[in-house]
Image 1 (cartoon, chains in turn blue, green):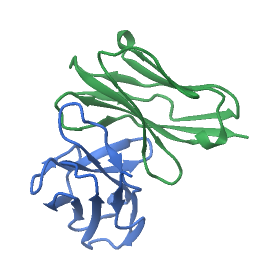
Image 2: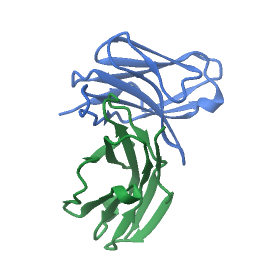
Image 3: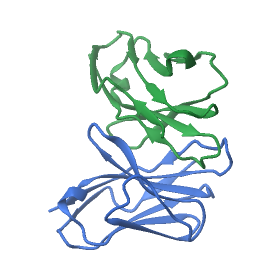
Amino acid sequence: DVKVTQSSRYLVKRTGEKVFLECVQDMDHENMFWYRQDPGLGLRLIYFSYDVKMKEKGDIPEGYSVSREKKERFSLILESASTNQTSMYLCASGGGGPSNNEQFFGPGTRLTVL
Amino acid sequence: AQKVTQAQTEISVVEKEDVTLDCVYETRDTTYYLFWYKQPPSGELVFLIRRNSFDEQNEISGRYSWNFQKSTSSFNFTITASQVVDSAVYFCALSLHNAGNMLTFGGGTRLMVKP
């Protein structure tokens, strides 16, 4: 059974804290993605990775960084959390190739920054 | 750049009604893929369907059906005889060929099915 897991379902942090969101997939997928979801805006891509140690900026990378040291794990880092980063964060993975473009999603992490 | 628009932000129906969720997309590419995902209250997006740009055949899966029309750049989703369990947020998305899984999502439509 396909599985993408995220380290926390709910997280509360204070402004200025460094925050790590972890994502693990067990499907041996090359591609992994981080999105944030806000009401009315749908899902917006923050960063993605095509391979270990590779990363690419998405549509809204400001204030975020990522790390992919192993194929199965993709971490999203908020270097100094701010209240406007309060959101739902969704991780996804997908196989490589031009038509293997279905993404599988984790359950999401609802982050609140106070 | 590509864009996906879901003009209906929220729809409310009574159980057993049919409901259609609209999706309009923009792209200059000729090869692309369209998706629908369901997000139930639990939060996890569930894949429903993928269509490629060369296959305009409508698809039916149980109570779900999809109408893809390139002439109007639309990929609409109809639920027949809706049920309370269909209540969720539904997202339409677009991916370009050779874009490595990159998806552009619409803003989502929240469907509420009342008993």
